[in-house]
Length: 336
Image (cartoon, rainbow, N blue to C red; front, side, top):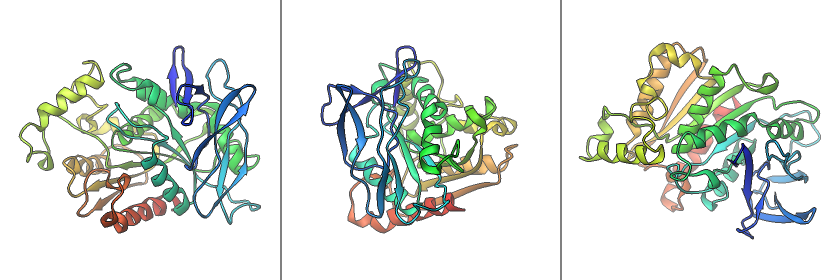
């Protein structure tokens, strides 16, 4: 999902890429098809992961003020329908250096399918394709992610999962690489703004190999001689030079301990990869969070041995066990 113009959101139709359509859809990733409604194409999820089934199919045109549809395609893992079970809602932000990728990419579809099947949970994947840098420099992605988390469609997603409940029992935010960076900044904004509409709160934040950098190189970055130069050039490019490399957007370690109190989630899980040059940034993030004024209950660290940055998004037989282990760790975190 991305905001356009005066905050209006737009979506994309994979089968007809030239046709815009409402993005306010609840997704448990699967084949992206299109259904005709009121003379135009609306994206709905028709094919879902093994062990799941569709419970409701509904879509509508977006509201004029927000561009977000009122109804959604709600998908629940099998075995919980007809009970009082209220599944957690996972709002996911995809990575891609703020420059590329989409919520509809095959890699993210496959990963989220596996994750929601293991959790179980309902996932909403936020599309940034129409507001990527450099045309839309930061903080555009942060603003769009925040709008997605506050939108009425999140409450509608909660109703679809939880019957008459106004919001889901537990709300999680997550993202990979720069999507993890976005998840952190959205959680910070939630704390500073006093929470989400309707009294909802973020139960947990999951940062998967998050993208954090800073002027002071951590040990895992020092092997690359031009690491800092490249990081500074990239960051200046995606934010149009508005923020330095030590701005809290990209370097939360630069925050004073007291500032961490604003992190608006009760629990946090950070995963890092042994062969990722940003590995120690993630480790220090967890250390800083634990030592800060944050009032949360848990800050956990999960390390993927022998793996590289976002290995779980790539096809690799050698990474299958590591991918399953990481998904199991995230599922356990969401279930606890």
